[in-house]
Image (cartoon, rainbow, N blue to C red; front, side, top):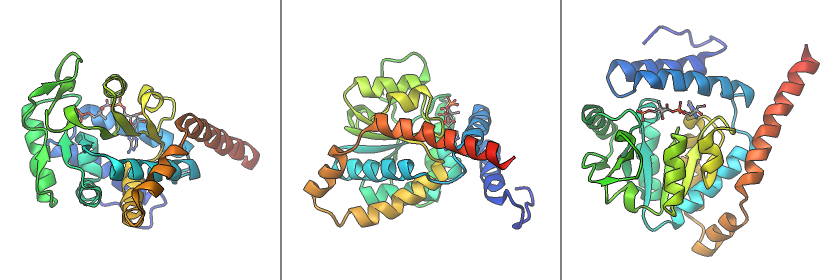
Length: 251
Ligand code: PTJ
């Protein structure tokens, strides 16, 4: 890793970038993941590099949905594996949802590397190595495990491809996406869209899970029933607009 001084004003963002670069170096993140990270950084600027009120509500609802689910799954790609492996393992235990490696730019070698990376971080079991079921999508991005994503009722997808997100929704699944771009196809297709950096989102969701596990099923369901994803997406766009308005008046 590069030697980034702790007092650098952009320390947190630069360290996140370092994690992605390291992910590519150790063969768990794709080169395309670097481009995706750059796009995410741009949108993170626009939301003020913080968890907005609307994103926090989406995170809370997402945790409730995972706690209520019968067969929840946390999908892991090369970017998530590089950025938040520890939080993925912790969150998977908290909400009792297995991890499944599911890649857009799939190779069996990278799937296996990510599985061992997550196990090194403490995961007891990681799905995705079997690849015995197919979403009806062309090329490797449709390969999933039958006892994982294929039969899941609620799927968390950090940094997802729009087509695959739509396919999962079409299969009747509840899809929770984490995507800093509120205008992406993924964001618009998902059942719940968390417009936040995956690094902040998963940290928040781990904390929320500890609190929300104290509620009974009816209380969790009430929080889910009151949720409106269209409104949350509109609020995310308005928050970006307000950020830009603030910049204009500050100049
Ligand atoms: O590891 P693989 O092969 O499965 O590939 C993963 C990537 C992310 C490369 C692949 O799914 C891809 O190409 O994704 P896209 O189409 O570039 O979409 C990534 C989305 O995630 C974009 O809308 C970005 O704004 C957003 N994004 C990027 N970094 C973050 C993010 N959202 C939340 N947190 C981030 N750190």
